[in-house]
Length: 191
Ligand code: FES
Ligand code: FES
Image (cartoon, rainbow, N blue to C red):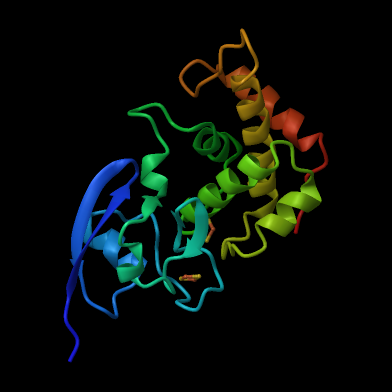
């Protein structure tokens, strides 16, 4: 006989708990907690739409049993923004138009953060390789690569002493065009 179990964890920095069934996966747990950024699509670990971060490592939420989140540190796309201030990666995806339907976007954004934590200035091949486990059915790959390159520049500037990081709120339309143009000139090409 299977029984539900109450687990405790931190979710985007806040303590949380939930009662989960043995068969429940992480996507279902997050949905139960009102978070819809991780979406189940293939349910086979192939598309990356269900990506979440568990103890600093990206996992496929469709294959990760919720009970294993007991005592873990969970991070989701909902935890990236600081109030109304978007994370630079989120800004970059918006400014480059790196999505159409947006279904895959949370997974790409989380994997981009993982990539930039490991490699703050990835080349195009690095980006393609690191994000190869994430699928975009709208085929927004050229813009996604632009977004990752732009996010890398934003993050680099934000840690430069004396530099005031740009935000979506303070960038003018002309500045955004210059940013996107600079990214394209670095050689992003189609898939
Ligand atoms: S839904 Fe989990 S990898 Fe596709
Ligand atoms: S933007 Fe539609 S699946 Fe990627």
